Image (cartoon, rainbow, N blue to C red; front, side, top):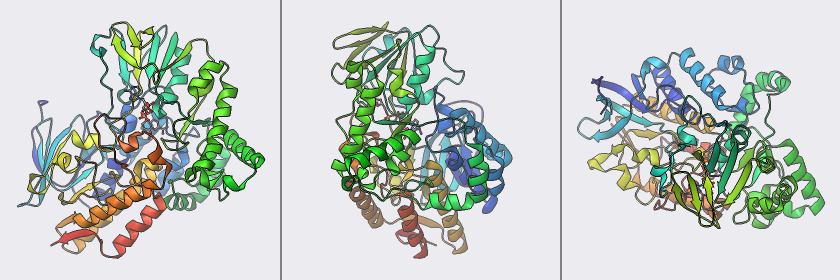
Amino acid sequence: MKSGRTTTQEFDAVVIGAGFGGLGMLRKLRDELGMSVRIYETGDGVGGTWHWNRYPGARCDSESYIYCFTFSKELLQDWNWSGKYPEQPEILSYLNHVADRFDLRRNIQFDTKVVSSRYVEETNRWEVETDTGDRVTAKFFITWIGCISTSNVPTMNGLESFEGEWHHTGDWPHDGVDFAGKRVGIIGTGSSGIQAIPVIAEQARSLTVFQRTPQYTIPARHGTIDRKFLEEEVKPNYEKILEKARWSKSGNAVNFSERLALNATAEERKEAYEAGWTEGGHKFLWGSFKDIGKDRRANDTAAEFIRAKIREIVKDPETAEKLLPTDHPLGSKRALIDTDYFETYNRENVELVDIRHSPIQTITPSGIRTEDSEFELDMIVFATGFDAMTGSFFKIDIRGRNNLSLKDKWSEGPKTYLGLQVAGFPNMFMITGPGSPSVLSNMTVSIEQHQEFISDFLDYMRANDIEVAEADPNSEIEWVSHVNKVAESTMYMLADSWYLGANIPGKPRVFMPYAGGVGTYREKCNEIVDKGYEGFILRA
Ligand code: NAP
């Protein structure tokens, strides 16, 4: 335990995490409901994901004008993003600006990890303990611990013997990393890897990419933001744009195509895919054909278009062949957008190693040995992802009614009602927990919807003298079954991905987010509210 502070205080609400989720929750509960709130944050600053993920090339792939808080009209009008997609340093500046502008820091205790939180039946309060010795109680316990924040460094023989530096993208040194003159190896080609690879390649002496699964990725066409678009189309129409995003499938204000790839001619398909590729970003998927996400034959037409692009861009045919994704449909893993990812393999200093066919055997003091080769390296970058959605919960000893631990309750996969509450854990709320659209959407839209839901719920409880709110176990069973059923009809079930927990050995294979879409989910939540918080057990 860290030494220093030891306090025993009482709050209306304790919130974990000072990222987008925690900051907005604090503002709502403190400034709109007049509650006493304490945020505990492990880091030494605000930002959450954006505090930790400082790897080169890190940015969000929702467009910047829609990746923001929307509670303040003035903030929306005042803040000017510089890039089409917001880059990590700028998102961090934005969150710092929000923390200062709304005077949020005074309710945040930084450098403090919550180690346990226990519901006490007799008092109807949560007892929260931290690694700094704080023991506080709160009526409401609210988690914003990030869906993708527990870094996964896979167990690899010999890592402790490696004499160079190694880093995980999700826990990147705050002072930066100097690649100059170094032989760098990177393991992983997910969202983080494909962003980092082109940037590291430009700075390092050499870069060796250890790839297990080839990826589909579309050019992001990132650049500075179109000022005219921002000033003339976005800012005067912000409310309309935001409303569209809130009721959309993915939390973005875009138009989805109504056309079917299977009804189009080969020429029409090519034209649509070329247009999407040229415009770039996720619009390749949304704007081309609506059956890509539903019908494998339609999906194959888009997948084949991308494979042809890879063959066209990558000059060495052997490298191009290794980069071709063939074992899963397009969009069954997290959809990716990139800047010069495939082009990077044309650089003299970049080598691609296929570890699906020649797996890593061991890390040696001087590099990495695969089944058929040895690579001398000065640095290893792990872009190997996260123990997503549940990993961060399990780092805290969370106990509900009858001392039931969340870890035990979720031993066969997460069980929640709406991704908001867990039966047996009264007055505990999760912002974008498993079972909500969260990671399948533009996060800020999903986060704000949960902040509003929770805040309205607590207000309703107060107005109606309700002391305890808890998910009904039957509603939880029905919701989990609905989440599974919706996932069954998607491409997501056809790939080994972190959505299914497949990246963590031993993790139950359960599809964790809700794939029904942000708008549909919002509608369901609103119906539940209209029926007096149906599915929640409320007690005076
Ligand atoms: P990820 O998508 O889980 O990718 C991890 C990569 O590491 C995959 O290529 C995986 O290969 C590989 N890998 C994992 N364990 C390995 C092992 N033992 N040996 C060899 N390779 C291994 O993780 P991520 O790239 O950090 O992204 C996680 C999520 O964070 C994203 O899906 C996204 O939601 C979010 N994110 C978003 C952005 C953005 O907005 N642009 C940027 C970064 C992250 P396999 O595919 O074979 O498992």
